[in-house]
Length: 474
Ligand code: UDP
Image (cartoon, rainbow, N blue to C red; front, top):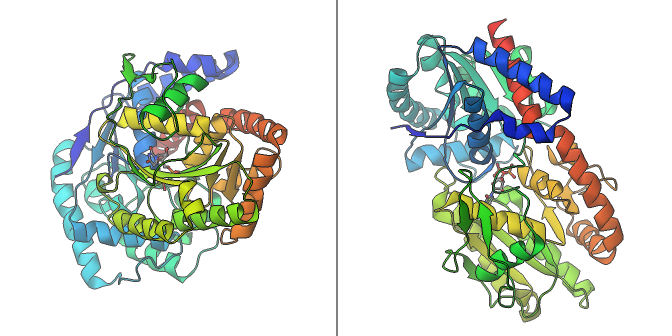
């Protein structure tokens, strides 16, 4: 059965501080038009997991602001069988151009996919009324389109993944999804390059965004970041005086507890060395193995370098639609065990607690803020919110030149791009150059912050949504 995740309204006025007078007036005008347009109708968003990954990160924030505008925006999460999520993970890889585990996407898989979505649709049709707008997120939900459209809902499909240069796998993925997508009036992609021919006549490009007021991105003093990392055992030494506190969405103070269930591999760093950080789901396309090997190569070449690596991801049992995570983590752990003692001591593999999503966000915030360099060495990447988050925090970043990372990072200007995502040497060099040139790192970080402010924050995203609804009514 699909279930609803209740989202509190966020007053739109919170965004006023992000904008100049003209920007704020424009946003308010869009909000007013959207409220009028959606009067008496519901704006549904349906995704496949309530926790972990970029969609689960972004949706509650945007829905909160939409509710704050007076729109009845709501979030539903579908449920599925392990077989279903295996197929949808396979599809996720296919749209990134990768064969995943190479399993089939044939008639049997279609039958399983359709059956799970038929069961979900039955429940959804009780809730969704004619005229409602339903945004379906990613391949997991695409097959819900026909049932919802025939009940009179206006269906939009939003795809958060993609590949710059389609290959046979990508086409296989699109062929699988075609019957579902036929029912979508509009489709939304993070980059123009991701739009498949079958959607070209009804596609909008809307990149994701971060909420700079969310727990993950809210201002945090360096001592507080240190304290959070010290109590969770991610940094050496006792926490100093500052309490590991953050402000929850409801305004109440939260505190990262000593008992926060961080699973850490390794004895922990022997000294307080600068952090190189990658925060990602345990997915081969995020290339955690490549980050580990690239960092090991860096240490071999420059044994004097003061640096340690933290590879952090969610506790593996917690992301419902990501069944391969445990295996990917096991593979990284095996690789870590093969490294020299010196490298092992400089690398922490960390599973972050997910039970309290705001505590998790506070730990990620602290990690990103405390990092000397944030990396995202993805082999494919739809957009890469982790890099947006780090750039907002004025961190110098090293990212692979793939997918949406290329839209965000301008090489040498606001961060560094690694041209060949598979080239560990180029990656190691880029990280080293930032660690060895703090002045340049500060400059890149400052520009990164400004870049994110203008392009990838909530006001821009909400404006794009207002335009989407306008187009849907046209
Ligand atoms: N994230 C998190 N905890 C983790 C790992 C990831 O909160 O342990 C968040 C991360 O901060 C970001 C999102 O999950 O907000 C990942 O989004 P991204 O677009 O980078 O990748 P996706 O997972 O959607 O492929």
